[in-house]
Image (cartoon, rainbow, N blue to C red; front, side, top):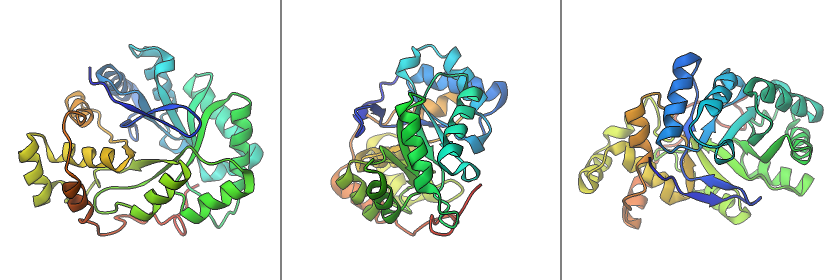
Length: 277
């Protein structure tokens, strides 16, 4: 079993430095894949209402070989559930599908600025935390300005902001803002899926130097940036490979060189314009 280290969130919760994305992990095969991951050392399972697999995630938790309190289950409120009461109802719906008595980390999936209700949604999440429905609360795909608005309006700082982050889009300014405000960065699409990232000569060369794979180089880069990557894989061998990134260290120069591969966003995911219901 691989021991994945943790960091402490701004609310005192121990949070893994690497987790498992569960998008498209559905049915019995999806459940088995998640159980395998937990058996390999994963303690963070990331789902969402819109992934339509909360039932499978909950079943994987029940079948897992570790105690429930060792696991961090994340879910996300979709755009159609924005609003104070709607957010609480959404969380209760997720709990029903998960079959769990709490969600460990609840996020707002997208800010959907044209709707203009993410502050009310955040207030609902604060209330849900006070009721014990969730343990930690955070957001996904929020900008510095949006984070500031939440903090100024409620006095509650998100524990996590999950954003598109990979060597082609390292988000240095946003990560610096997170560090200043005690917000943990979490990386979705950490391997820049459907791109040529893993064939980059720099990553190939560093993989040879460290006797690892280019994938492991990229995931180690995330760890050293202070961000929790959540790579998705249903293959047990690949899951173990993805998690086995804590036995080597990249130099500062190599971290900077990987960050210099920056191109910008790879998909239409600008939080100012992209919206999901």
